[in-house]
Image (cartoon, rainbow, N blue to C red; front, side):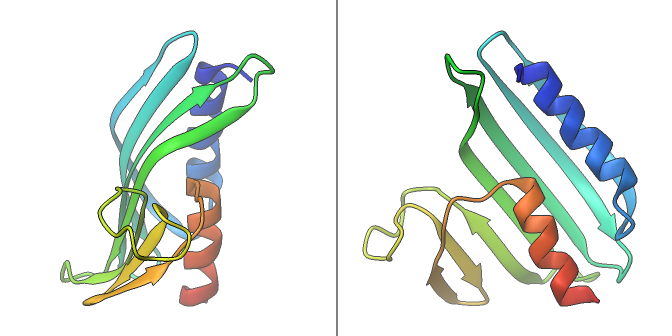
Length: 125
């Protein structure tokens, strides 16, 4: 898959996702080898999800999300959960992947916008 095709797949998915009421793409870029997308989503329960995803495509055309942050907040802007892989919690299992819930930092795993929206959908239904 090319970086441009991956970006297109994200945008198409967001526009078709029934739990999303508004999509605002703040930034998107694709080269021959990598890309970045940043967007703000309004969800059916009035919560918001802001995310940034930097990805690379390898020689076999596989997409690898290398840096990400998915920040889910309620209608008042209070954090519900944030998934990210910023390497600032080296003692957490699964480092650098982790989840913020309030003041708690929990072990995480590699994520993508598709996986995050599946987790959010389970919580808001």
